[in-house]
Image 1 (cartoon, helix red, strand yellow):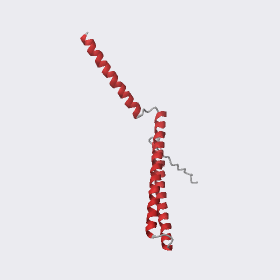
Image 2 (cartoon, rainbow, N blue to C red):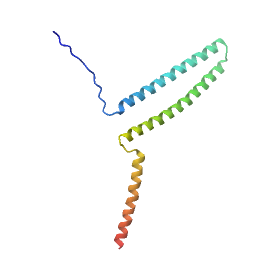
Image 3 (cartoon, rainbow, N blue to C red):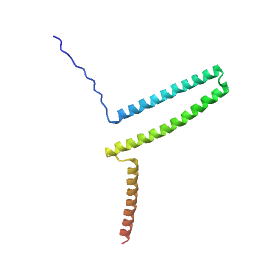
Image 4 (tube, rainbow, N blue to C red):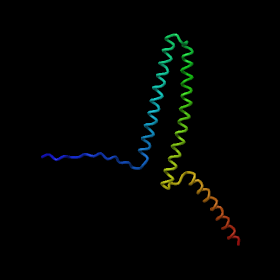
Length: 129
């Protein structure tokens, strides 16, 4: 009698960042696809209006340009907001993992520099005494 062999697939992740990066990549690609599709639909709709004579070709081009500029501005706003949220989330994760941030390291560097100056001043005072 044949034995039933069970095959399992295991995903190995070196660190916890890969799934998050993959998700962010998928979201960005979906956004790009949606924008491209929407642009095509807008152009198609305006071209139909021009064909029917409901608007002039010049007005149609201007309308498309205006819509694309508004979409570009909105996309930039969304991108900026998403970057801010992602940065905040990454800081929270690093904080939970007790990984110092750049600001923490910069603050420690400034303290070390100040302490080094004080030690040098004390040595000079001690040498004169």
